[in-house]
Length: 350
Image 1 (cartoon, rainbow, N blue to C red):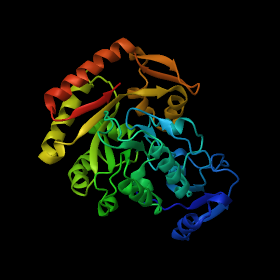
Image 2 (tube, helix red, strand yellow):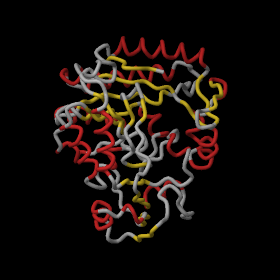
Image 3 (spheres, rainbow, N blue to C red):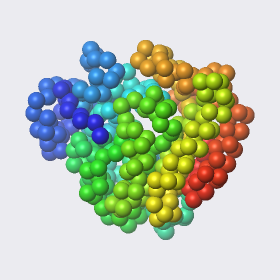
Image 4 (cartoon, helix red, strand yellow):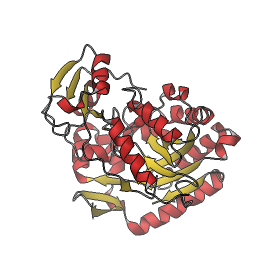
């Protein structure tokens, strides 16, 4: 885990409830500055990575919208935070914010009350589906990494307790970090952690400032033993050739990753583990930014010969793998999973 010690904390007046005051008190050496809006920050005069290392923002989440997902979860819960310590080259959150430090929302009780009202209005018993057989699932970390946020205030632990004790709801989130402080909490299988995995040498290039793939895999058994529901997230799947031009290099690397998983996991962990698979989507604005801060990553992410353009629902120009080629990639990936780790079911792949 990163040793996150912000030197500057920006806050809105309405974020300084008891939790917000507690966060401020935990960083007594940090400079503090009140801002009008948590999502419209002043120019900080710092580079991309220093903003993520040195700045923390406290805000109050006003729009507590719950969105249908149907993939990683049934629904996407209102965000507990926005932004991340990591600087992944493909992060969709960074695409939409010029200045993107970690922003913690301090009105956690409002967020939990919103989820509680929402889930109690849904049919019960819940119809079983690929997200979960028994509970309505809510993704609590779409715009941040919950493993990092867990160490910044008591809010995430309270949210874990809410889902653990709720008779109808279950939490889920993907992560690229291993926060061993979370092992002291017993979620009773009501919190699903999804460790994001890709070939290690690719992760070192594009998963900037996150925990290594080896560290993530080594933690899976421990989190299951602590009471978490544990899945893996092969995302994003990046297609690439080897240094010698071998077009099958990405396949060979994923087979090696699957074998690493097969060796590392205990039988009882394999019995419950499933995966989700998401092939890369990239973005023109992010591509231009990466050319200045991480150009080597773009050699893997921006490959027009394999990709086609698509305007996103937010109006951005994205690129993704050509749809005919992608169909073949999906077949190849699914076959490799069935051959190398047949105990791992694919919940969805696209």
